[in-house]
Length: 211
Ligand code: BEZ
Image (tube, rainbow, N blue to C red; front, top):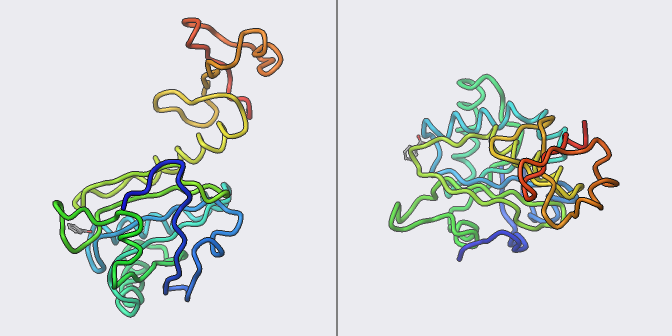
């Protein structure tokens, strides 16, 4: 099964390194990042999990909870967690789901059999407080993900949910944003009092409204 943008994130119960959870209940009213790893005790995954642990203050600022998943069992996750702390300089500070029967991997389409019949690929799902899927991303097993980019997407989503704007290529918080085309110039005068620069009638740039 594949999970698409706009779907409600499938709910599930699972054992994790932080105990048994019911996923939707665990998310509560926060944003979520659910991401899968091919397997435990592998080098790329070790660096990714360490980096996500280091990003915790950034996730907290944005009201985001992170949770990893691999199909290895819980006792393996727990042993691996010690290696992550030792080698990456930050102890694991978010749960990793054990999915040995691949139930959750199946629900979210995390196994791509032509790539690998057994282990999950590197998927990421960003879930909003209404439990809606807002980003899906699939990386091959041999390429570590860029979690700074995932943070950047969350910044964009949180901004564009609050204002009638979109964010341009490589946008970072604080940079100019795009007024969406459904907003007329007349309406834009009240919505964007700082004004805008129209490169084309359909391409109007205005300062980040949160600045
Ligand atoms: C890794 O995490 O290092 C890895 C996992 C599966 C295949 C290749 C690399």
